[in-house]
Amino acid sequence: MAKITNLADLRKIKETASDQTSARSGGRTRIIVGLGTCGIAAGARSVMQAIMQELQKREVKDVSIETTGCIGMCQKEPLVDVIREGQPRITYGPVKVEDAARIVSSHIVNGSIVEDIVLGRAD
Image (cartoon, rainbow, N blue to C red; front, side):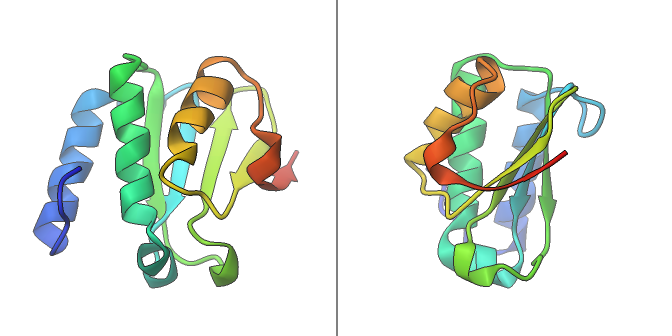
């Protein structure tokens, strides 16, 4: 996993993610990672990298990866939202690096929610 020490490193990861997935917006599935200061402090950068690596490994293309700032649930960071077309928005948290593969394989690829780390659902 690449070490992130500054904004340029994070931008490089963002560019790589765009290359590895479909267009930044418009994918049939959206993954939103909380990258406010609270999320970053809790390890969200590593979680985002792990998700991107898993998508690349599985050659999943119709996904957009987005970031958001703090949404006020700092104690539950890192937060990851998954929005699959035609399904409710699922918020996972706190997400560990090792959860990334489960989220991608179960939820993104197979449509099965990873229940043990679900924090919320929005219809």
